[in-house]
Structure formats: C-alpha cells, structure tokens
Image (cartoon, rainbow, N blue to C red):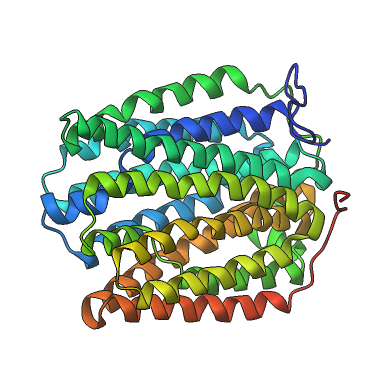
Length: 403
C-alpha cells in the first residue's frame, strides 16, 4: 500500500487497515455528538425559536456550502504538504468545540453562526480523511474500507438520537441535550491524537502548485462524474426537510429522535454491505441504483399522507446511502493519479457542498410557496436526470475483488 504509514498497523478486517478503524472510531463519536442535536434542530428552530422552513434552508445551505469551500482547500493543502493528520485533527476539534454552543441560541441567526463554524470543521477534515483512507488501502478493497468507515460513522448516528431521546425522557431540555453533546466530541480528539501517527510524508511527488495544473491532469471521466454529482446534489436538499415533513404529520420530537436512530441502523448495514458489493460490481452500477432509488423515495414522500407510510419511506431511505456513499468515494479514488487524491476529493466534496446552498434554498422556497409535494417532486426529477448522465460515463477500474 502506498501513502501514510502507521506504526504497528495491522489488518483488523480483510483489506482494511488500523488507520481506517481509528478514523471510523473518530467518526462514530463525532456522529454520536452531532446526531444528539441534528434531528432535534428543525423542531428547536420552528418550535422554540420561531423560525420557518426558509430559515432552515438558509441555515443548512450556508453551513454545507461553507464546508464545501474548505473541503477544496484542505484537500489541495494535504496534497501539497503531504500530510493528512493535522488537518483531520483540526477539523474534528473545531466542530466539537462549537457544536454544543447551539444550546445558547436565542434566535435562529445564532444557530446559523454555530452551524457555520461546525461545518467549517467538517470542511477542514473531510477531504484529507477520505484521501487518507485511500492512501492506506489496496485499490481492490477501497469499497469495503469506505463502507466500513461509513458504517461506523452511521453507528454513531444511531447512538446519538437514542442518547438524546433518553436524556429528554429523563427530563432534560433540548438545550441541555445540546450541551451534553460536548462529551463524545472530546473523546474524538484523544482517539485521533493517540491512534494515528504519520511516520513520514507521502512517498509521492508533490501535487502541482497551481489549481489549473491539477485540474488539467484529471481526465474527462472524473470531470463528467463531477458534473453528474453537481446536478444530483441540486435535488438533494438537507435531510432536515424530511424530519420537518415527519414533524408536520404529527410525529413528536422524541419519536422523531428514535426514527432518526433507526434510519441510521439501516445506513450502518447498507453502507458496509454496499462497500463490499461495489468492490465486486464496480462503482457505476451502485451509484445508478442509488440515485434512482433516491428519486423514488422523494416521489413517495410527495404523495404519501399517512404517518405510517411516511415512517416506512423514511426508514427505507437509508438504503440510498449504502448504495452510493462507498461507491462514489471509491470511484473518485480510482479516477485520478495518487498524488492528486486529496485535490480530487476536495473538488468532489466541493461540488456537493456548493450545490447544497441553492438546493436547500430552492427546496425551502418551493415548500413555502407551492407546498411540500412540489418540492419533493422537483428533487426526484433532478435525481433522475443525474442518473441518466452517470449512465453515460465510463468507469476506470483499478482491479475488482473476487466474488
């Protein structure tokens, strides 16, 4: 394997290094902290602070677009300095420090500022982390490495809402739950500081100093894939709108927290299985299936009326992540030269994040003016168009796992 060495690294899963496990643990505790807050945030904004759907769209759109810009910068930066860990550690630390402060909010603009800082931390860490996973993983096992990492991430998202529901059931307020999210965030810093050691800089040539040079070296397949991702993301608004749809159907905050946890149970199973399957079938069939399934889910959200139907669709929605998350990252890692891997993940995450602002704003505007069904139909149409584009892009493989 090329890339960052880790002292005493051993394979704890077939094809998966200790570094990936450590990064998975960091993601577990980060999502435990984050998901104590996220499923309650729409209810907190609307019910406590008096905000509306458009305000929610502004907050989430600005937050994710902020992360997108820093993902581009941090990815290129990690290629230039040939180090991943400093940026990964800084990003996780920043998010963990500011996220619990949402509990101090008296108006929605304060939530906007805290979400901005939280996502800035995500922007610093994401591209270097995803590049690091590829650095220490054999190409034939990258799907399972990304799948295992995402499964551990989603496992934290299972625990987070359950912890929030338990604390609220014991009498703690939503603000108290937000403050309590600081504890797992602190664990992340220790896990990363002690668990990952870069023995040396990457044994790769430095990336080009200019952004034009790096972009030129990335082939048409990567650029076509990036364009399709951009179009899909325009229809992929924040999942907070799905939570708001559940809330408007009459489902209470505590039950929503439990449903959010169950939704992530589906993600845990599907992302691990989906990563292994992507190594066998290739990335494109998985992404095609995932984006098509996403379009179906949004169409069903547009027409469903009963709470039982909405709950069932919401839980099934978790399968979309298993079909797409490992496969998309595997595809990115395989499409570009090794020395541009951080930059490639930066552009990929940047495209997703930059489209998130108009996606959430448009979705919130259509919801507020034409109603929720129209907003969900729009999202489904854009996902279907992106799936058509991805079908026409050839896939570059660096070997496949045997069946």
